[in-house]
Amino acid sequence: MVDPKDPDVAERALGPALDFLRELWRVNHALERLSARMERELGITAQQRLVLRCLAHRDKISAGGLAELMHLDPGTVSAALRRLEAKGLVRRTRPADDRRRVVVNLTARGRALAQPVRGTVEHAVAKLIESLSVNEHEATRRALTRLTMLMDRERAPKARPSTSTPPRPA
Image: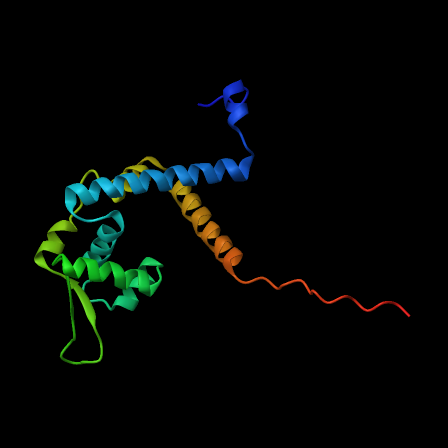
């Protein structure tokens, strides 16, 4: 356990918000490093693997449905699907009963790559979840959901302050 009275720890402490943000950035950096290793070893990034894993659970889903499932922008998912399609891991088809609709599903190679395996981001997440109590897991999930909502609000356009001069009293 870290002793907050330790001078080295106290010197590094920046306050609750910045300390939390530093930990998020550590997580992000670790995710990026592991994703780069996954791309070298498996041929796909962590994000591409998440797409495959989601498709393994929801085969024959539309790109829009996949974006909604993953809480991502449809353009982000479409770009990932194009890369996965070029690698022969997914295919887009039109169902015979509705030729307007396009669904995405895994190829045999994609299904093989979607199997659980050590050394991946989701394996690390699964190990973390195994170590947490149900309450800790739920509290963490809720905190991340709330943080996302707050950041989305920060991204929303704010009302600009008026640049006109207020009227002078008579």
